[in-house]
Length: 480
Image (cartoon, rainbow, N blue to C red; front, side, top):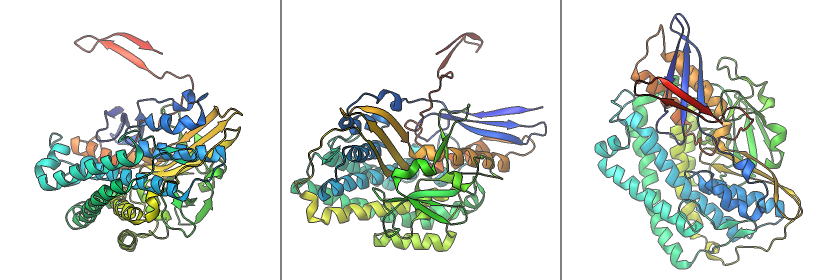
């Protein structure tokens, strides 16, 4: 007898999703899908807005990665208005980005992913959470909480607000950094570097070795990778060339302005997320045994595509990682390891920027004049390459918007990892809570941010409300 297993909600991710797993008559997996159950429509209601307002509008797409949207939008505005921003403005944007990265990577590693590895994927669900981390590692949890608090306060000082910053604007940065503010940020910068160094050392010695067998098997798929590098091929989270790597390691580079020549967006009827793919990597296919066009973004992808990292401690970790797992590394759970390398890089980089005398320059903004144009901006968000593409009319009002969000790139690969995990774990109808959680573990490795990734709006049913009585009997149903 055929059967469908539903995992809902998927926990410890940003946004709402479910997994459906279809079993055949023998109790083995026929198919598995990762469904997104929420919808955002920013591409629609941004139309008609002045382009200079976009960095303040799009930052509200999500409360988890607002800095990334803020910066990508400001860069798209720079391009639309044809302005090169002052060097100090670029450094302030990078400084804002680095503090935000530290806060977000600490959040994901310790409070979203680590419960599966510190308590174990089979631990009772009541313990496999942030409270379990606090109970088992109270001193570390306290240090991480304080580090995140200070990183958030740094974002507020630099960006004007702690969650939805306002300082980046087309033409530059509206808020210079004072010397007094810089001294405070330096104090927190040293604290964040300490916690970053501790985190990767502790994980390598006490956490990663315990689940290395799981790394080799769970959610492992074979795809290409995409990320941003500078002119010398080094990891760059703010600006540079897009580097597309095949599963075999072949590399192609292109400017972000050519993204639509290399990336196509596919729509499936069962998901609100689009499915980007690269035709150069083959015809579109989500089959884990015969994938086509699939590439991954986010931490593991960036670690794979870059030739080096410009900060010494993170570069040493990259070399050790690559010596152990090769290049490109395909194991999905290595996203967690790569995340700690990026945590260390950002902690080092923000301290470098704070030591730069130009960071307190008051020359941070250029005058702009509205015009009809198309502008594309991108940054590497913690969850992948984030692209904002705007077209304006002669009054500088938005005519068209296209957003490709970091998690959207990974939609196809997440589905492939879910299917691979389900097929490898569920046999002859046997499954339990640990198995279902391990399928979630494969999803969490990608650190998906679903709130800002949902975009399709094609007239299909978007919302359905079912009214049931106390016995669960359906009384009425409403659809939009």
